Image (cartoon, rainbow, N blue to C red):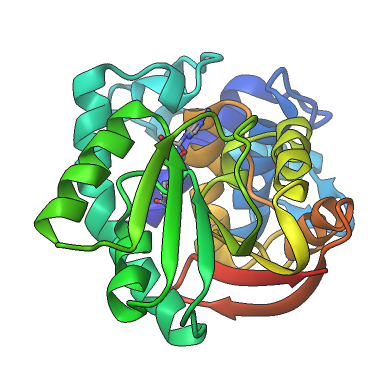
Amino acid sequence: MNDDLLIEAIYLFNKHFNQEGKSDLPENIEVAVLRILAANNYISYDNNFIITKVNYQNLEKFKNQINEEALPENIKNISPVSFFDNITDIEYEIYSRSNYSVSFKNGLKLAELINFNDLKILDIGGNSGGLASAIASKYLTSHITVVDTKIPCEIGSEYKEVNNLNNINFICDDLFTFNLEKYDYIILSNIFHDYNDKDVRRILKNINTHLDDNTKVIILEDILDNEIGPIDVVMHGLRLSINTFYGKQRTINELNILISEIGLNLLNKEKINQVQSIVVYTL
Ligand SMILES: C[S@@+](CC[C@H](N)C(=O)[O-])C[C@H]1O[C@@H](n2cnc3c(N)ncnc32)[C@H](O)[C@@H]1O
């Protein structure tokens, strides 16, 4: 899998970069390509990505070895559409049904790390409630509200009935503008990496109105330790940016700076698998 991701980065480098290392790609996609090349030692990084003439020529050698036909269509033709703006209802339903078990596993990890007993939790963009269900079934005295769009909320409500979970509810609303109450915990799992900094700030502005003095905010996603590592995380950044068009991976430092704009500070960071981490922020 990592080989395919490396080939995609080399393909985009050959197609879009000139010898001076400048590209015609959007900045988030350009950085994702450079991170993969640097993490795999094709170029170097020293506070900036360094593309020498030798780097450029070495990477050009791959041109004829890449089977263009086998590449994903959206790598060959990058288009300014985000995954969730471009999917049909049936695709949205399939996504939301399959997301349940994936995010349930993450919810189990989160429920191991944090005691949610008697707490009020908000899961923003919680899809069909997989993560929320893992918490709700372990902490029966907690209550979790999931905010998402219509289709995931409908599927989540169906699963909630099947699983007989009374401590979850689904609210179909826009994550940029919903207006609810204050919560003990606010969770954003795989949300911020779908957006550019401007949109993350819009989400944070709305979150700010749902915080009280003790609220903690949990971010779960593929966070980088630094600009080019860990490599397993870096390798996922390119498809993320291509699929969301505006999305990007952030280093923990970049995330801390953005989140500090609403007065939140890093409390704890824990890796939950090869790619994803859970980061907890508090006022
Ligand atoms: C990348 S998925 C993350 C799902 C889940 N939290 C996880 O960790 O797997 C992004 C979620 O945000 C939801 N979403 C996208 N745009 C939204 C919007 N404007 N308002 C509410 N939810 C939205 C999608 O339906 C989807 O469930």
